[in-house]
Amino acid sequence: MTRVDIFLLEAVINGILLGGVLALLALGLNLIFGVIDVVWICYAELVMCGMYMLFWLHVFFGWPILLACLAAIVGVAGLGALLHLLVISPILGSAPINQLLATGGMLFFLQSLATLLFGTDFRNIGLRLPVIELGDIFISYSRLLAFGTALIGAIALYLFLSRTYLGIAMRAIAQDREIMGLMGVDQRRIYLTTSAVGGALAGLAACLLVLQYDVHPFIGLSFGPITFMICVLGGLGNMIGGFVAAFIMSQIIAIGGYYFSIEISYVLAFVFFIVLMFLRPQGLLAR
Amino acid sequence: MLSLRRVSAGYGSFRALFDVSLEVAAGEAIGVVGPNGAGKSTLMRVISGMLRSSSGELVFEGRSLTRLPAHRIVEAGIAHVPEHRRLFAKLSVEENLRIGAFLPQARRHYAERSEWVYALFPRLLERRRQLAGTLSGGEQQMVAIGRALMSKPKLLLMDEPSAGLAPLVVEQVFNLVRLIREQGFTVLIVEQNLQQVLAIVDRAYLLEVGRIRLSGSAAELKDNAMIQQAYMGL
Ligand SMILES: Nc1ncnc2c1ncn2[C@@H]1O[C@H](COP(=O)(O)OP(=O)(O)OP(=O)(O)O)[C@@H](O)[C@H]1O
Ligand SMILES: [Mg+2]
Image (cartoon, rainbow over all chains, first blue to last red; front, top):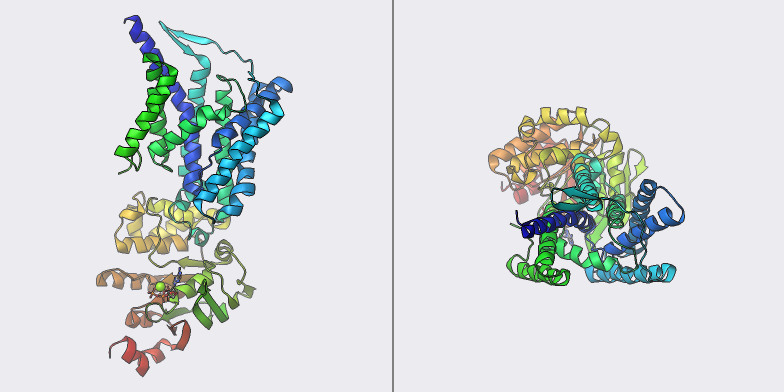
C-alpha cells in the first residue's frame, strides 16, 4: 500500500468512529420526535450540559471518571425530563411552530447560562488516552472507545424498544396517540420516560465527546446542526434511517477533510444534504 | 354493573349525546343500534374515557367513572374495541397483544392470557410475528378483540366489529362475539347489522340523533313495527 492509501484508510476509519457518536445523537432526537412529536432544537445543548457536569465532577470534585460519567448520564436524563415538564408539556397541544420557538429559546438560554456560569474558556478534562498503532495506521483510543460505546448504546436502545412493554408502547404511540389510553397507557408517563431516555442518550454522547473535545458554552453548535441534518436525511422519526445517515454524513466529512480541508468537508456535507432533500424529500430510506 | 344516568356529550359546541341513560347487568350482552351519525361511537368513547361527558353520571361496579382518564377506566375493568379496529399496523400481532397487556396487573399474567387468546383465535398464533397491517380484515378484527381481552376486562365494549367485512366474515365475527359471551364476559356491542346483532344479545337500545328512542329485549325489538319498517326493510 502506498502512503496515500493509508491516510485515506485512516480518514475512513475516523469517519466511522465519528459516525457512532452522531448516530447516538440522531437516535435520541428521532426518539423524542417519533414519540412526542416535538423537535428538541436544544438537543446538542443538553450534550454541552453533560460535558460540563462531567468536567466539574471529575476535574473539580475529583470524582473517578466512570462515576462522573454515570452521574452525567443520569443528570442529563433528569434535565431531559425537566425540559419536558417545564417547557414542552404546557404547550403540547399548541402549534408546532410554538414548540420549535420554545425549544429554540432553550438553546439560547442554555448557551447563555453556561457562558454566565463558566465563561467562554475552553476546558479540557485532561484525560489522555493512548493512540493505537495498527501496522501503519494510527487510531485514537478515545475514538474507538466512543464508537464502541455508541454502538452498545444503540443496541441497548434497540432491545429496549423491541423487548420491553414501555419500549413497545413508545413505538405504538407514534402510530396512534388517541387510543393509547384504551390500552391502559398513561401518555404523560410515556412522554416523561421518553424525554429521560432521550436525555440519557445525550448524556452518553457527552461522555464520549468529552474525551476528544474541549468544553465551552458553544460546543453544541459543532454537533447540533449536523445532527438535525442527519435526522432529516434519514427521515424524521425514522431510527434506522437516522442511523444510516449518520455514517454517510460522517464519511463525507472525513473523506472530504482528507482531500480538501475540514471546512470544505462540512460544506460538502451540507451540499449533499440539500441535493438529497430535492431527490428524496421524505428521507433516505422512505419508500 | 354499568349504569349511565342522563349522560350528555359532544365535540366542541356540537352535542352528539342527549341525556342518555342505560344499564348493563353482569353477564348480559347488550346491543346499541341506530343509523349513521346517531352517536353510537360517541357513547362508547364516553364510557371508555376517550371523550369526557359534559353532564350526567357513569357508574361502574359502584364506582364513578365520570372524571377518570381512559387508562384508569381500563384498570377498572372496561376494555374498548374501537371503531375501525385501530391496530398498530407497524407492530406485529404479538406486539399488539403486548400493548393490550400494558397494565401491571395484566403484565403479570401475560403468558397465560396470550395463550388463552391464541387458543380462542388459532389463526393469530400462526401469524403472531406478522405485521398487523398486513392481515386480512377478519384477522385484524381478531387481533383488535384479542388485544382488548389481554387486560382481562369484566366489560367488553365493541364498536361495529363487523363493519367493512365480507358477508361470510361478518358471520365469523358474530360467532366470535357469541364465543366471547360464552366465556362469561359482559358485552356492550354497537352494530348496524340489526338482524344478526339481535340474534346474539339479550337486550338492545335504539339510538337516534343522540337520544335513546327505544329499548327492550331482543325479541321485543325484533317484533317492533317501527324497527321492522325503518331498519329491517320488512
Ligand atoms: N371527532 C369528532 N369531531 C366532531 N364531531 C364528531 C366527531 N366524531 C363524531 N362527530 C359527530 O358526532 C355525531 C355522532 O357521531 P358518532 O361517530 O358517534 O356516530 P355513530 O352512530 O357511531 O355513526 P356510524 O354508524 O357512522 O359509526 C355525528 O354527527 C358526527 O358527525
Ligand atoms: Mg360509529
